[in-house]
Amino acid sequence: EDGTLSTEIWMDHGETSQTLKGNVPVNSLEDAALLPHLTDIHYDVRDSGALLQTIRDDDLHSLLMPLTREEGQAINDLGFLENLEELKILIISVAEDADLTPLEEASSLVELYVGLSGSSLDLSQLTQLGFLEVTAEPDTYTQLTASEMLPNLVILDLKGLYAWGASLDVVSYMPSLEYVGLESEYQMDLTPLSQLKKLRAVHLYSSYTSVDLTPLLDCPSLEVCSAYNAAEGNVIPPQLPVEWGSYDRSWEIYYELRNQVRKSWTGHNWMG
Image 1 (cartoon, helix red, strand yellow):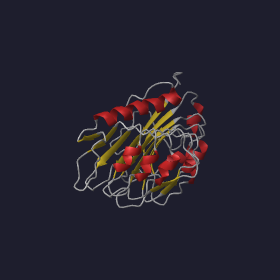
Image 2 (cartoon, rainbow, N blue to C red):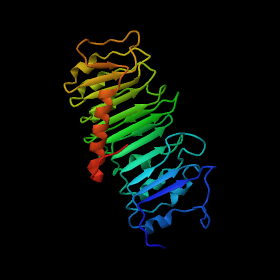
Image 3 (cartoon, rainbow, N blue to C red):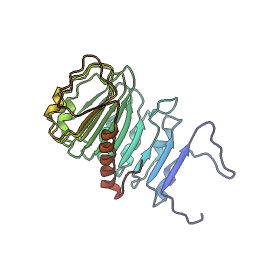
Image 4 (cartoon, helix red, strand yellow):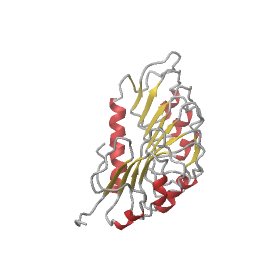
């Protein structure tokens, strides 16, 4: 009413939220399409994403939700993504057994942060991705697959201590990867990483199980392999650039690439 043009909407459905005098609870996002400069929605989900089904906004670029899986935070129905044809960045926690098809077909995405629980995500149509972070629920079997090249993907971050026992073969469809982060309590075969000629940093968030780092010798651009500790049984070639207990160089590369990806679609750097 005052003529102000909004570029962001923040929604908090937490129990501690207080409604300002004169405001009423939101029960639909259809009217968001009437805000011509709206580009971002921050949604503190508590309703399993029910409000998302009312979004009709072709110009929305960012939809940011919690990656945590507290009650009501995981999204059951991803059908709303079909209405967001210009979405560039998505942060979302997906409920177990949810149909991932709308997410797998969200081809406009450049940055994807997704929490999964025992799912197989096909990346074949997400060819614009530059950044992918997948957080897997503990004690679940989570897998990434692809049948088409993802030529722009430079960061792959896989998190979830007891989930990533699956093969890393999917990286054969990610020729531009420069940073790979791995968090797993399972012994992982790093052999697939040996084909990544642009790989600059490998970040092992947890290395309590033994790992053979020899395949990384075939990565000509590798600058650093960062690891929390040297687990018993690790195979570590002496010529490999390893930093134990320090992630300084790998984080530098990570943030450099994050800025590069964000700037590719916004025109400005990511500021954290």
